Image 1 (tube, rainbow, N blue to C red):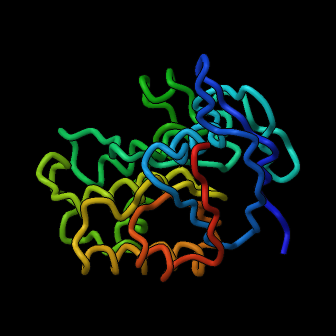
Image 2: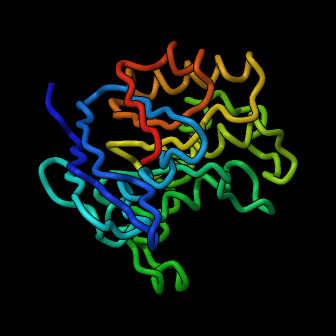
Length: 229
């Protein structure tokens, strides 16, 4: 298998605290790799470094052989490395479908002015985004809540919406930060199935941080353990 993502000696220091200390591992194309460890081990910071939400203190991250660490986060996302968040980032006054459509704008062809003026390209983008959003809703089994306001969703559906938002960006590598947090057993098993289908049917490589060990053991091809950075 080919390493699609390479983490090489990545380090992050905050003053005298070393949050992530020379961590190295490869993520193979088409695999599901889980990162586990106790609270405060540095897992979420590691995700922020990989997705370039925080600058590195040392080391580098390569995507398809190209260095992506310390680039602007939106550039990394457009290249295909996309992360979700522990705190599901959504517009709560919008419906599920509207949230997914908004996430598509990362890959829009029209300019911001074009969307404001309703240009031909902007209208074409909006039509494509709507079609894609409906496909994602169907793929993740969210048909029953597609028109529900995000503010009304329970935790399980919020997590599923977070994954849908990530999927809308057309990722090559999707970083899921605690995708099963706050779910009951049935919700967790449904999400586990969705993550596996994401890899099997859409070819997305998945890197996830999670504390639910039964789910981790069920879903992972490989596991990386991090402790004290």
